[in-house]
Length: 488
Image (cartoon, rainbow, N blue to C red; front, side, top):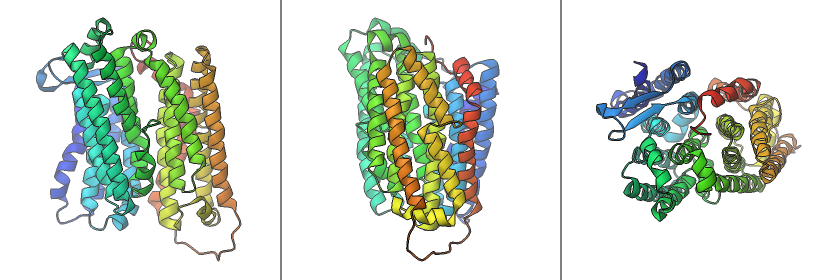
């Protein structure tokens, strides 16, 4: 049964999403419980799947019994299994958090909301496991459609943000599909492994180069890579507070993982380094994104905007690690991806608590948090340490391995970009803390007790940032042993 675990992980949220409108026809509040139960089971099954991959090697599933490349193939390898544990756990925590915020914000659309959440999770599972380029397009689009709806459901400015996301997301999907069609026209296959066998003999083809360029730009839009990031800050800022943590922590990371798959599993490391210098381009774009994203974050006053641009910067840092073309940099990049997903979830949980409970939107409003909820300040300090990259957080060790990978290649500009983005991150967190500890003359308002679900989700993610730091050595070793691309 172990070879069916990838499909089970996909079907659990999909069937729940399909059946939820019927199951919750009379009792709408059941939708939250169903989503929680499904994602809790998913988290457990994903851990079992990871253990199975570590012990017995990668798992391949052929749909309808058709062997690849004729049929669609899913593969649970070390990289996809590690990311899936992250996806399931953060999805579960996101739904726990949404249980308190969503009933007030959605006004009777609660069943549709959790249906979309489960559909989004299911589509991201498909992106993680599939080894078919067209299948990848389908799942990316299902995830995108669910994301548009989850953002726009808040109404008001969220509708405009969702519409802009839709326009740019559709452009990205169209470019990706155009690139896939070019590669299919040349190679006659959509299977990643089969295409990887044929591409080394076709590198002189303009269709191959053009196809890869279109695919990378399309996925760059999906992952909010500078300069294609314009949709993300507004989308994450004006989305419901219950939605932002899931979108910020997972959606762009899954698109980035698709990028990594194409570079290393379709092209191969040697081609991406020597024949078509894609990794050099990845490194340069990553360095620009790291610095530009952090600079834009520093210029903001809205705390969600600050966190969103911080996410843009950290996408760049991940790419710097991956772009080094060596094992240390790649492991550091993937480890930082895991950390950044947790940190983004924690930041938007914090922003959600600050807004829903204290009415905090801007840096100036943060003084309310400092006076009324010192525990929230402690969580922000922990997350801030991780974002800046200070020990003992996972953010420090992720940047450490990325810098080591860059030094191994003599890429001092990449090291400088990581350090400069770190200083800029320090600057915008200092601005946040100045807001918290600023003395105000306003009368002090007493707020009600913060719900347990808020404390649980923010506490778990804050603790996870420290735990990832303490367990950095075994996790990086796990990546080096089971998640490296072939030939790296």
